[in-house]
Amino acid sequence: MNLDEFRETLKADHPPRGLAAPLRALWHEGRDDWKRAHEIVQAERSKAAERVHAYLHRKEGDSANADYWYNRAGAERPRGRLETEWEDLVIGFLNAEG
Image 1: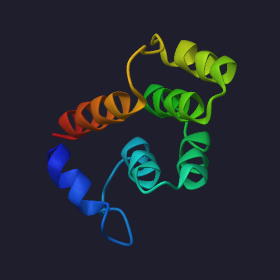
Image 2 (image 1 turned 90 degrees about the horizontal axis):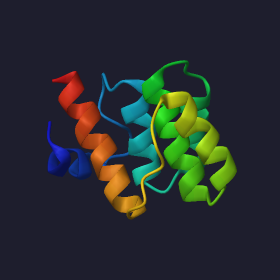
Image 3 (image 1 turned 120 degrees about the vertical axis):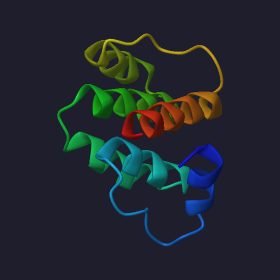
Image 4 (image 1 turned 30 degrees about the horizontal axis):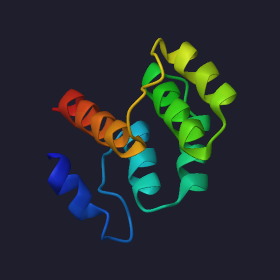
């Protein structure tokens, strides 16, 4: 699956089967369900989930909390647009699932 195909799935009622938790969270966030996305990554203990957790708090506008999660994930807070960060995360996780 590529980014365009992933975006197409946002029209469905449910995420595609088999997505790892970080991608599932990004799917829900892509449908403007921040709360569900946060619940998913909050329940996970992985660098990938921590990275999405950071993005979600950045989107929420809570920079201090976002920076905490970026640090836990071993990443720096991007300075670009939120949409670009979302796309980069989706592409990276899709490529990792291969």
